[in-house]
Amino acid sequence: MGAIRVHEFMSMDGVIDTPTWTMDFGFDPKMGQAIAKVMTGCDGILLGRKTYEMFEPAWSARTSEEDPGAPFMNDTTKYIVSSTLEKATWSNSIILGSYDRGAIQRIKDSRHGIYVSGSGTLVRALIADGLVDELHLFVYPLTRGSGPYLFAKDTPPGKWDLASCETYDNGVLYLGYRRAPSSAFEA
Image (cartoon, rainbow, N blue to C red):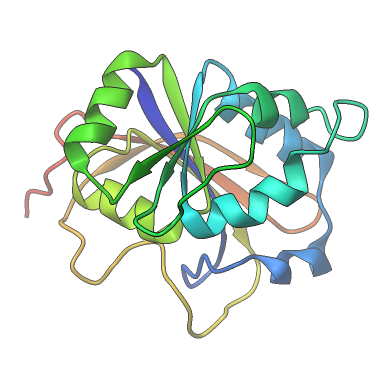
């Protein structure tokens, strides 16, 4: 059974909307190395429709010379959770339809690892259903005040173990968490 590994760029107050606000900080090459480690061992990508629609034009024509992550993004099987997307134009893409915990569990059981980036609505559902095994958070030194948050207000309590952390010269903090063996919070 594979692990679902979620990668998010987020503000200090937990907002994970389209991260155009990250541009002011630049991209430290060490961040790319950390993201590559998250992808290592993954043989599937799980995306929500909005993220798929942003990623497809950005990645589909990108080469390994332009970005070392391009082969992974383009060659790996992509599973898209969407009730509205009718046709996937990016190579190796499969539309799953509406969110279905059982369908995602079956994919998880058939893969070594599944990489998820962005896809806030999908990630909140995966967390609520206990399907996320690892959270890889790149926390930017700013607050957004409002926007979609990583955790929904009704997210069930749970525990996570800190597996790794790094700081970068651009002020970003990387936090890697694994779901604790006993994921239910005990007060």
